[in-house]
Length: 151
Image (cartoon, rainbow, N blue to C red; front, side):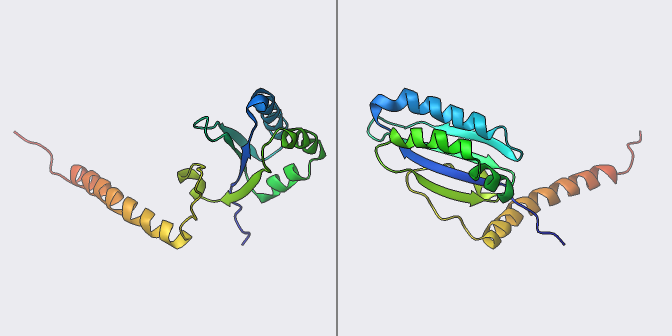
């Protein structure tokens, strides 16, 4: 049985000089445009700095699977834009890859948390969904099996 591939998200943190913000955002949009030409590309989200005290941008690139991400990373025209972006930064970019359902529930933040084990997420999902689904089925059964109303 083949292994099911999971979506993968790459989170990149970049600190940008104030005078380079417009050029940085333009180059980031160009990078997202180039990524959109790849099969398996699911989207890009840019999180701007929350305050002037911390000039950190977070960029999330989402891909259908690891093969799609590998194809994008091997794309040589991406490197042209990347070199221009790196020139605008205060410090070197930080990069993190995450996959699976955890990407649905977390937003990039300054303090990255380690995702819980998959078994823990499965157990919590069961405890959340099982009672709700059971109540829905009981309500449907009670409504469908009640005797007809007579006068």
